Length: 157
Image (cartoon, rainbow, N blue to C red; front, side, top):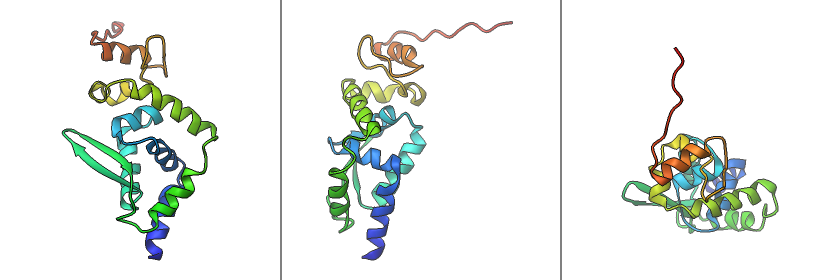
């Protein structure tokens, strides 16, 4: 029992994993949605989600190529509900959490299949509405979402 409590507290104690848990408070998310919001590499996001799953704080379900994550229900870890309840009442005014939620609203405006079809490097800073740009790679991602070809700069001789 003590081991499960320690695992849950360690998993929730990492700032990035705490941000992921705060994102999942709003409902189930695909890995590519979490990546687009946090601006992290897919392998980094997957590693954090695997640690959260091992601690019993999140549960996953596979749908075709995509894996969706949601907050755990406490079946795998009896302490998960208490840790999630503590987190639920915290960090709501933290600037990074506020910004993550704003970005999540924009990410959810894009269909999951369109977002996940983008190469991982183009999901970071994905523009999600006309005139909205979340990063330096925004224009290339906008073209990819709209289906326009991506033009590369010509190489210099």
